[in-house]
Length: 378
Image 1 (spheres, rainbow, N blue to C red):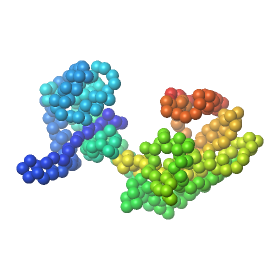
Image 2: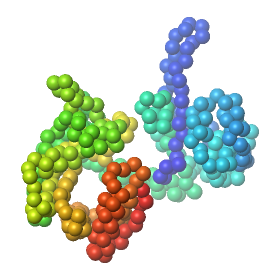
Image 3: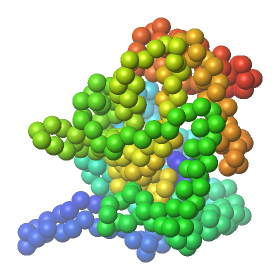
Image 4: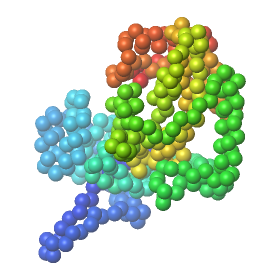
């Protein structure tokens, strides 16, 4: 299940014609197929098959799946960590692994409140090295009136889709000839962006930040030293060789600012240093996850680093929170939730550093009187 609907994945592998030996390409589902599938669904609803829940052992489930030759379901079974294993059957026609619950029979499903929406490609388990499946997206509601309201909402959302508006207003484009997920800002869009950046810079300067600029590539050793490579290498582009050394197009700015800080002998009397940067970074995203400006491979982020004494930490966090609120409110973002993420299992730094940092975060929010929740290990 997903928000406002559900999906089911299908696999149509290439086959070989036994008489000619020719390769038969995998079948591609189309919009026409969706209409045929919906007709069959309506027939199943009309027959009012009972939907029956059954508990089985893990071994029994494995034998059932092996008998029908569905290896993907075996992987799903292995990923289920709880007992018992439950399956649901539709009469004697079909069964599947499912946690449930379900209605008692197919006849209780409203035909006119179910719609098959689209077909898309999806790698198995989101892994581009695995099989490419075909995914049918659908939505189901209590009655046709709710479905009609949902479709009307989708139509209105489509009119306001930032990808549609970006093209219509000539603000930006994604040029596939250059590569997916890379944004081209047109003159009108660049004007808007420049005004936002000017506002951002002045807000930071007013709060005693110094604006800095750093390169777009650097030696890979920087990210190995900082620990970013070990933690985030799956989200980094491949390295390039420059004079027998490995260089990395930057996925984040942190090591650069630390290098700048190390560039001179500093006195604690000069702290804090507040350095802000509109840093353009590049991160590897699978093509299937790219979505307009929301999910891209190259983007410019509001990135800042503050170098301060431990006893200055809470005051600096209070300043950051106030600055964040000031910028967000200018763009109409007034309602949001605040969460403190505690130390995850995979982390660097001593227990004392994490305790001090968490205490400072809590202290800053309490000082401001802001409500917040806790995301343990987030």
